[in-house]
Image (cartoon, rainbow, N blue to C red; front, side, top):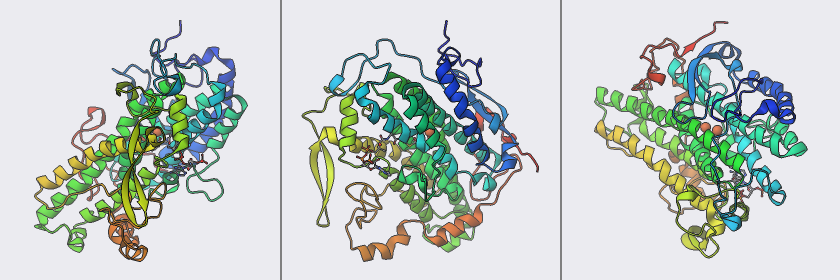
Length: 483
Ligand code: BYC
Ligand code: FE
Ligand code: FE
């Protein structure tokens, strides 16, 4: 009897999909495996690969206890294929097939569309690890270094999740796509990653925290939408990925929060009340709040671009086919077809921003993005509560949807973070007030000195309130290998 909750280790690839009795797919994955390990080994600097890292590994898909903690060397991490348990009698939740039994195989007519979405999802996972590959060298603590590596190994597992689907359900072209996923490189001129934000740099730890807060949250929303897929294996894969995703956003939210807290503490201690006195604040060796706002502006807007065009026939086709649903589709109360509904979408015409009603079917990207913005606002409120507690008059805010966009209606439109349309020249002249400048980047870079004593933290960031896996403050999260 196949155990569908616990992971089986009877093949090289841990899994709960019965790989040992699926020779064809097992063989294909075993062939892909060395290339993956090569990719991993070529990525993160060698001494970290040989260090012992206190990581969680998925050993089951039981929501009550799916992970086990322990020291591992990253190249020996047990990346596996895990699908959430099958829901009995699951139905296609949306589109023209709504109510029909969920597919266990890919319907021929949707093959290309489905493969494209799986490939895009798969492409982002290794891309993020590539973007973060040098950060360990400047980790503000062993705790943070461990969190970085935890996120990295899990993004690696997310790649495995998509590669399994490609090998299992898409035959020869699936195998080809799986190989390509290891060939594209974040930021490469010849073979870049597929989506914009995944070719940007993650140059410092504040960017890493903003990325895991804002960009991993796009991951969450896209996985939520794909978890609603009528293609059941994709749905089950995404549901399990979402269990891991929560930690990535936790790393981001607490990372930014701890940075803010340290800044506020230092300002209070020095008697500085004006958050805009940037030189005075920087003299304390912490990151001033206006610069934190600029980093927020950058990473939030790059992440908005990941939702695609506001009005998209690709997206309408995927919804109508039942391949990709809306956020929490199963909880929404309508006919799940959207044939006669409308959804408000902004329009940008002759330098004016207007709101119009678009057919809801073509506006599902916009709707998911709106759900994302609501979700992202929560953490911003909690960051502001930290600032307020320190009696500093400053509030972070999400910028207007038209600010600094490269995809969709507002592509290249000169709009301020407050949503005012100005001239291109004015916008260019003020750019550095809204987005990190070269000087801001240099200042932050100057703070990125590694701290590797257990329990010690760089001066620009506060320690966490609790340890990972309830470990004490001086726990050695990474036992560094000395070259
Ligand atoms: N950059 O009709 P549209 C994650 C392309 S993150 C470059 O709007 P659609 C993670 C688009 O491909 C989640 N190109 O497209 C986070 C299309 O090209 P073609 C990743 C872009 O399909 C952190 C054309 O423009 N998962 O997991 O409605 C760490 C027209 O666009 C971009 C997914 O994204 C862009 N930003 O929407 C690790 C889910 N945006 O086909 C991991 C799967 C659009 O005309 N993907 N284009 O040549 C999708 O659902 C959709 O493909 C998108 C785009 C939402 C991305
Ligand atoms: Fe991921
Ligand atoms: Fe993630």
